[in-house]
Image: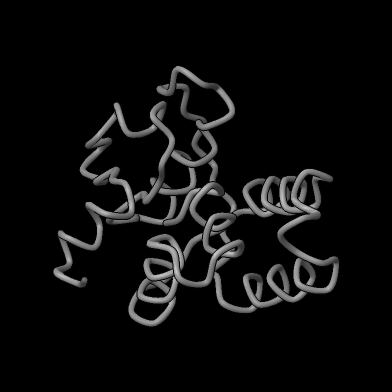
Length: 133
């Protein structure tokens, strides 16, 4: 599963490592989302500070494509393992969806690697693990 920071980074730069990860993950894996994680992505992508990077229409297209391509689930287990409580929803989603990976740049999540047999890695490490340049 992809953390919000990876999704946003990929949306800003089509040639970034995050964009490459996004492309590979959507082609070869099931991407998980919950209504809570989608709401976070939507709230963050529409922040004024991102007006320099994406038009309103680009944001709308990105969110629509994201919704079309993800597997939405509703995690039932509440987890409080992360030092940043806002990131617990990522862990809850990964556990509920039996994720193999959480791909993130968030240190609050990365320090938990592995979490219940879920590998928590940054984009560069993910590409190395799956052997894609």
